[in-house]
Image 1: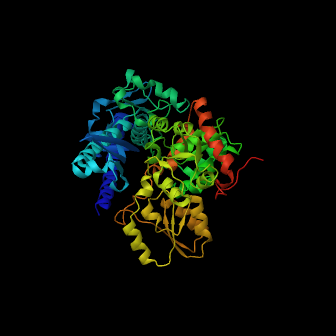
Image 2: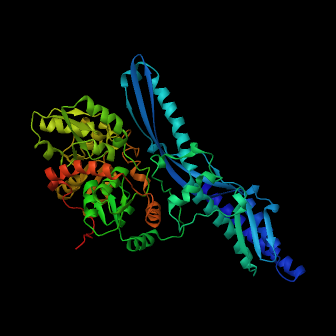
Length: 578
């Protein structure tokens, strides 16, 4: 009801405003022989001021922060992943009559705007993710409460820091300028006045408009950030640019644009191939050339003659595509789309861990950074890991990382003793055993399909354990009409497309009602960001060539040892080069 009331109020205000503008036009034409542009502009200003605040732009960011405490010789650490939406607002009540200037000679109406303001981040509590180390200290002290408070404060600051970054602020300022231009230009045209409307911000150097120049590369535009009035020094550098080479594409609102048509147009003009992981939103899966597991997607893209790879997935996946296709441009719609497994295994700590165990070889799950791949001996996927393990001599000591759940599953299945890195996937860690058992009781006989990244207490109840592709194949070939799926639920989109007569139920997390089994990183990619990434060829994956070759060595070893087990088919439409 409140939303309806606001809409009706806005509609009535708009009608009244239109009447005021037209009345002003009539009065000026009666007494002045024609519409007075100053009168029309004043009426438009009054109309805008009545709206109080304008929100021309919003952007979604994600903060990943870790806090630690040390007491009694013990260490506790908690990581918080907090996605949030920030609104960029223009206080219309601050625009005064003196901010409007009419130049009769050039027939130009100039408007000066106050600076944009940024709202406090809006947090969707159902999308928060946390994982922790150091349960003993948390159990005997108030460390957990202190870590939670520190993480919340740091995450809020981080979201605002990203919001103040140069690119989203430029886009927000430009969006506000366009709205204000239209708000003044349309009444002038309606009154038959041929005039130019120029909108600029009062804080722009030299009073010149500062639009985002689409003809220039994003890196060149961002070189101007030191002079930008929207920044207050290095403290506002967003984590999206934390490596000095990456810039995040914010979540845009491109109203009135047919994004599917525009993305298809850019796909052709850029000679691009679009990849989407099974965990992406349905609209991204449906527009992709290939949908599948991460490594298989990179291999498919490498086999095409495309010049550009747009990878709708997370950062390590796009980096893998760049490792296999160094000559191609690889873009990721949102550079903040990371992975908790990657975050849990910093390269410097992994390097130090390896140095402590020089007699071990490192089998590393592909869900890791390029730097960790370069430090590894053999990369594995969930589908190829056992095949590779079977080829390694029984006496050889092994480090397996960064997923302790996948490593533990392989230890139980093969009997191989491995030293496990303590990383987890926050999505698969979120499944509730209690709620899963309740769901099984409501659907007796329904098989449970689980990814090996799930913890043991979930895998113990699974009828089939496998990679996302293996889970999909099992679901489609099983005679069961109802199945419970314990992995990121967006894979159900492909299941329902291929077998619409079957029922697929996502395994529950927490209290059975939350969306905590949905990956917050994957959700950062949107159709809007994909369009911007193809349009601007940013954010772009870049890496040092020596690093790429070192990482490729460990990938090549996997493909040599278990290439046939990687990505047995996909659900995309083939675009392989002849």
